[in-house]
Length: 285
Ligand SMILES: Nc1ncnc2c1ncn2[C@@H]1O[C@H](COP(=O)(O)OP(=O)(O)O)[C@@H](O)[C@H]1O
Ligand code: SF4
Ligand SMILES: [Mg+2]
Image 1 (cartoon, rainbow, N blue to C red):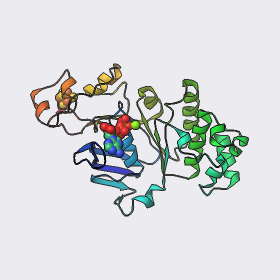
Image 2: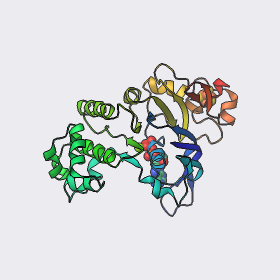
Image 3: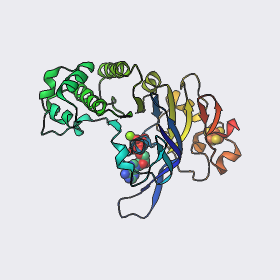
């Protein structure tokens, strides 16, 4: 459904007029199939939101290839396919127009009132909330309305970027359970971008681990079936691991307790080491 082949995303560093650039994403290979629930995890600044922007076709990649239903994405066709992808962000109030009612916002999906009410009930939202303005809803209700909107627009897949991070634990659990229920027949693919390992594990069939703009691991079970030293460190709860750039070698070189000579000199490729399992590390050569 969507496939990335060695994708890079370059940004200017230090403002619009700066001449220096850096790669926020490097050599990204990803494939998401119909109906899959996929997690993307990593610490702050790793490149998760940038990856979400490319997966949602909100931004164009700088190098490599992206295929959406086998069609190669370019600057001309990107906006056409973007409409087939849903996006739910951390702060839903910024995604609703504060001057119109929720119903008016949801009618922009071109669905009729009956469908809208039905979808809201499926998300345990009372009909009366539809006639209110965004600020009159709680954070959890706004977020479920944002989910309703993305589902009503009938997307191929929905990307959730830290969509439940701002909510309290019980609201978060409620929303996650609802998301699983409304997609029990796997009509949509879900992509969960989060720093929360437990959440990613609970909701995803497969997880990508991202570090300093690289995918360092892909696994079907982050807890029981991981291989990369960085994933191990993440599971041990070590945060704030960003260090000085090591442009030539492995992005995790500075902090790795297993490093070898070669790790300083070149970047390991992302390599398959089993079914649903890939790792970017010279230990698995
Ligand atoms: N529009 C932009 N212009 C310049 N740098 C950016 C832009 N967006 C993100 N970055 C940088 O790219 C890196 C990855 O950011 P981001 O994708 O937001 O990470 P995450 O979501 O994992 O916290 C960071 O160093 C961030 O400062
Ligand atoms: S490639 Fe080397 S430095 Fe990088 S994670 Fe593997 S062992 Fe550690
Ligand atoms: Mg982010």
